[in-house]
Image (cartoon, rainbow, N blue to C red; front, side, top):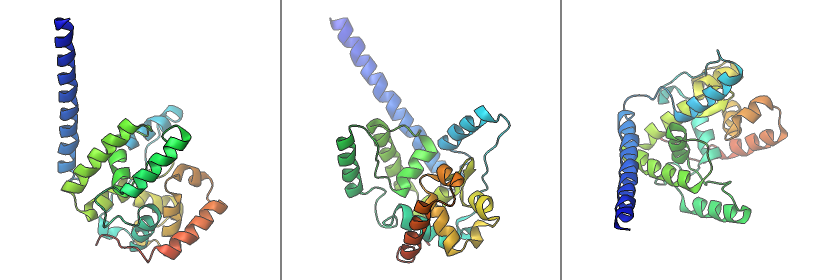
Length: 232
């Protein structure tokens, strides 16, 4: 009995150490990416694998652009669409999390996450699209790390450069080129609201660009985008 207990304690200690080392690995990357731009994300790698199973030679479309080279229209539109309190909250919003928990409880499974822009970025950088409370807990820990190390401008810059915007299309510059043959710096308010409206289902709207639902969403975003604050 004592031997079994000793092995159990050792296994628990090993599990705790493994989790701690994983958090250090995440934190080391976040520190490095304070100045260095990430050249890929976990979500990009997953999507590339899915695409290459059908087309082995396929590559992702992504071109990194500095924050100042991204249209203010797009910044306003994305914040209006995805996270209107982005510049003020600490990376999460308790009300949104509580609402998501209630919805999940009613449905009996994890379908909502109440994610902010920082939480979405944490997931995209390091995690998978799995819906579980364990993954959400890890996402929150990474979110707090990001908010502790980066300012809001850096968080938003990385987000706008790595978020998915279509089938194999990642980041604002690739999205602007893909949909409008334009640079991210030259997007007008309608174009920006349309791109923001495609989140968080860009692959669907890439194939259904004339969706009535998207058109209504774009109108709502355009009405709200000048009422929100964005990092300067």
